Length: 213
Length: 373
Image (cartoon, rainbow over all chains, first blue to last red; front, side, top):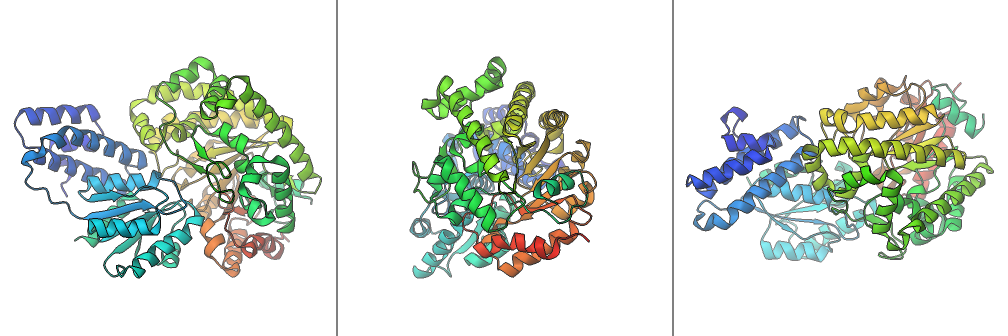
């Protein structure tokens, strides 16, 4: 990961949450003929710096979310121009959802954004997702990592049922399952039978890196 | 000592005869009493019957909430966010859930300043629930407050104290964080600081007035203050000091000046801001923690300054054994309760699927280990 002083001006602008400068620098880069993928690499380095500051408790959830929004805005400018994209292999696919009976999407959405910013393809199956929907999404996407979000203690049963559904589908040894959400901890992970507990969005990215290394 | 004296003693950081117990009761009252969650939310008589049955049979507790956060009227008035309600949008036997959207718009900061807090709150209530448009929302609120006062008397007649006389939704940053949604509010934190500060003053002044009047009317000199998304999990100290702390300090000082004890209901992890709470009036506040903050660190930093309340974690009530709950309660009593200034409680609401024996363990723990010699 690039150190702050090694970042490009664009990477630094994103790390400093300077939305206006990010937009200006993206436009400038494009007008200078710089390839979109190269610009995305600079933006990703800036997001890496944001994640690093979050780990060091210099940045917090608001910085994490706002940087993700700036990143997405920049990507919206670049995405239509990526016909010549050459480097584009995603780092891995992650299926993310809030388990059945729980409609909270705040935590899930933060994790989805951070995973996408880190270069993972995320299949977001939404909230109140039945166990079978998780299984189907894994079969369709060939993901090997699943993230289950929950905010309610009453969702523990549905999370357990989702893990069991992977076992019944003979997929349990092919997927790694992480959980997260305000009511979760290591004890809950064990009770549910998941492989990882992520205490926050950057922990989820670390888990994805470990799974897809 | 009776329950009222016990609570007064711990707020003043004096040693009562025994550690008081006062879990945050809302939807669990439905579970225990056999009513549906829909009945608890919509029907006041059933709600108070469920509260009294639960607080009496699983205690008697020294203090109970009136399932305020499962009161459909008060809940929908207090939060600017669409809510899925049991019996209406969800099965009758599940708890309500918030639908996080960008319900409040950027212009609503200015609207609040133009209209003032009360008219703004009624407009938002009308947006959420069209039948509350105009004065009808105000009538619904007044009815709910009258009902609340009646319920306070019912609980007190059974020897228990009511936790709070009003649920303050928190400073503007908290109220708008729910209403704008966390994504929009994160951007506002950096792009609309002036609007937050300016509208925040209007909100703080109006809500403090409403809180004081309501708490006095209901006869309970304590006010719950919602604190969640302004925690150090979410925002930096610099932004907290700029966007939140002035309004929070104003609110607390107004309440204390009116003879009311603020109950700082802190969800998520507030540990890194505990030192800032030393500026609030000594021996006049309750710090209520939900199991995410470090309650033992709170005792170290704030134990000589404010009463601490908490914090048996939700997952322990659901997945833990009775012995595990008892062991945690004993640790709380013997460390956080040392020398007084402590109320044994749940970390945020008792979860709806808590094991009965685990809830009962709170009272059993204070009876066994909570007596001061």
